[in-house]
Image 1 (cartoon, helix red, strand yellow):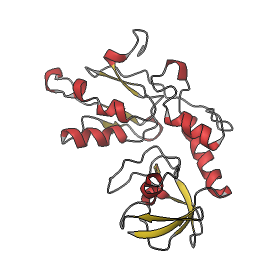
Image 2: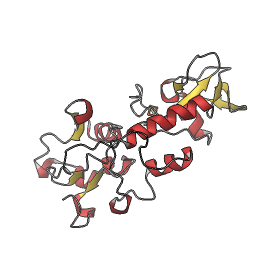
Image 3: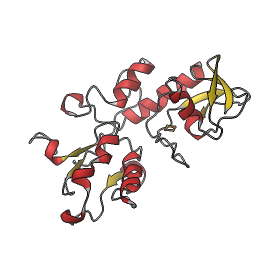
Length: 219
Ligand code: FES
């Protein structure tokens, strides 16, 4: 174990563990979307989990930092909050806010983070720019909503863990990047309907089982 100090409180953490995981395990919340416990190479794609570490010139992402004995961390400096709020608003600039129609409503990580950062769900001052992409209903059991998806990649990770190889993947590039289920056509071979781990791990309601959707959803 190593001893670190977070927000002026001492904290024991397993040697080799990531700072974000150590803080979350100790009940210290840091906004995050792409973190999956135990992953060796965190994607650090959501750019929300910033913290300030003594001796470092700029805030860093806590999910990519390995704890070290004597490390001194602040989770709530003005610079940290500025980065988190900007990162969150950028995410929201490509997110369709339709909470009333979304199965994640009230359990959504975005709603939680907005409350924590004391900002709304709108992207202001950044303009909202949604993908020209309808919900993807091509999978036998799943529907993917590209404009709800925050591209955290947690669904891909959990699918790979469960099934040895992921049935889901990122496709396209840049702003047009989406989650796709390439070739998921052989209904009898797919564990998706009984597994649905990707639906469970999605932090924002971007994936749903067709069987769970209202008939007017996915249109
Ligand atoms: Fe660290 Fe997403 S949890 S960048």
